Length: 262
View: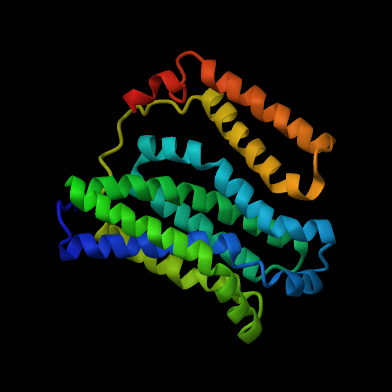
């Protein structure tokens, strides 16, 4: 299904994509108010509690590059659905977590799922709204919903924590994820048939590109807390090294010299 204008089909697809986008960006800040309750309930250490936030941000920021390439190779709707499944499973794991380790694993799964969803959503917007003016309006709405999610997470997290308890800051994602999975085959354009042989996801480009972003997000997350200690300096060195290899790898689809061919 594609549309040049804002017809009913296009608006329904936009509502689906932006609803998922809202939830994905809510998770950036929705845990902030719940951190004290989480720390008591699951016996977090003071440093471990910071990773309730960092585990999501690190994986969300670090895996978007390779997830975007995977959407090109494997299909936009297919990857959108895969990201929702992983995000929803991670939310369930967090909401039912019996200990700190399980919660952090769930947060990392949420982050990877979100990283898969975001580039797939952008590709789907371009496929659905093929007329430039309609695409600009759709992208504006999508961006506004992302900002609204990131900005309202603290308030919503406080309400849910005070009324229903901290698990519901995660469990609230489950009906939204299931609803998106049910609606996506009807509202989103189908992927083209799979080719007999798919282009290979270059391992050097994937490793260095994703590793660079993971290390960079790690530095950004830990530097305000740790300062320039051995770990943040090492992560900075890894970021620079991976970025250099990423930029000069010949033949990699991630190489900047080939971006114009994507």
